Image 1 (cartoon, one colour):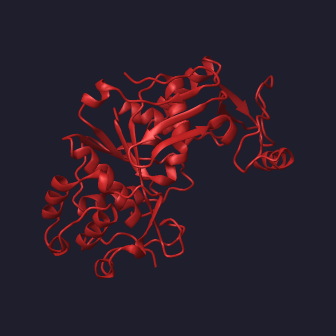
Image 2 (cartoon, rainbow, N blue to C red):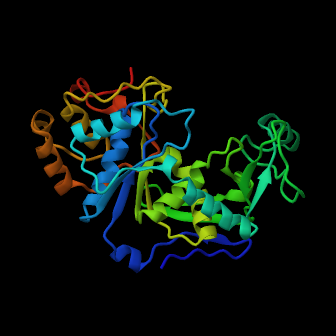
Image 3 (tube, rainbow, N blue to C red):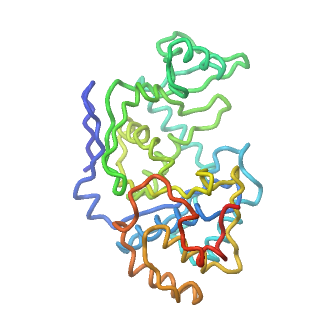
Length: 336
């Protein structure tokens, strides 16, 4: 059974006990359809796939399309075609978060009924001014609307919903990055679970969906390491299980920037996946034979599934594409 210690003022630590460990693993890859997959996406997909499959587990694909303003038409289909071209095989149907609003609404209603969520009408400008006046770090919510009576709204008559966060430390053990601790109330504050534009926040949606899909292994980039304590806090508040977490190094370009659409990362080539697959395995600390870079995709995955060892992944937050052997970078997708 999953346990979280939640006594006020003490550490709240997510632990996974024997029943979860005895279950076949369930992993997932959850891209946002904001553009094509790139080399950084491939590293995350490969790590999550191999970690789930090594225990004869299931691997799911979920589209995190809860932000329609950022979504690129056709990107979701392109992502699935790329995964297929690279030899990934997922279990079950692809889940789209945009079709699961009822689940998020039900979770929000539970939090509201328990007195754990409240309305916030603060604008970004107001929050920035208050933070500067109080000397708070950027992004920390100063509690402006906490305890207000009525329904506070912004100038447009809209409001967000925030989770009421107690003053305690949330801790967990990442399978790669080690012990993690965060004083959520002081370092983040009461965080948004429903945005003022009516869209459900990532933190709420991911917690609800991981539990609904029975996910036991969350393998993703280290850029989401800081979000994990908030997700553990929500899991505890909703009475949901806590998966195991493994945060992989994020791939960065020569300027130290995360590969992304914003940094002009090149899309993965569909016609020749093997050089990128080989390079991704090498980035993850594995030792693929050079012959696999020019063989068959099926042969690569046969080797990868038999050879995957998460202990070989370097426990770092980022890793540079430029550090890969130049001979193997040539035909693989990368940042300019």
